Image 1: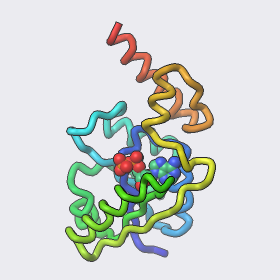
Image 2: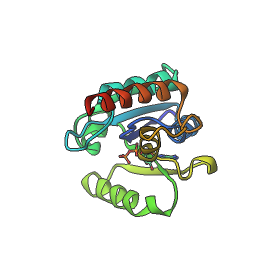
Image 3: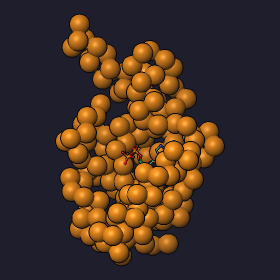
Length: 165
Ligand code: ADP
């Protein structure tokens, strides 16, 4: 499919679950873009630019554009001429939020279609927030995030710890 699809999210930071979804979405859509949401009201560990860089280093495929978007998802899609949003569904707990988002986006722009990929089994309970929490307290998250991300996360967390000493 040559159609442009967008995989949007916070990616704070990208995990192996996101990565699995990117690979699978890319096997369906040749033209896949990853949009990192910029929302100053949301507290994140990494800046949007850092999150983009972590995704680029991890994905390592120049054909997949990775960029930030500071506007509403539907505005971003209209701006780049895309009509398809790809999202991941983990456990049932994701369903309500994702359903709400998909319906709201469709109400804002009826041309936009949201497609869901089920999370792969090993990643079904993997989230960026859980990874950050475990890493913050010194737990081992090496099986949950790419090595490059692990290094960046440890560095960032030790800087935060030093700040609070
Ligand atoms: P957001 O703040 O937009 O939910 P996230 O980075 O948390 O951003 O998630 C982006 C998308 O990736 C969401 O659709 C989410 O359900 C999906 N996702 C997150 N973690 C996983 C995972 N482990 N496996 C599959 N999909 C995932």
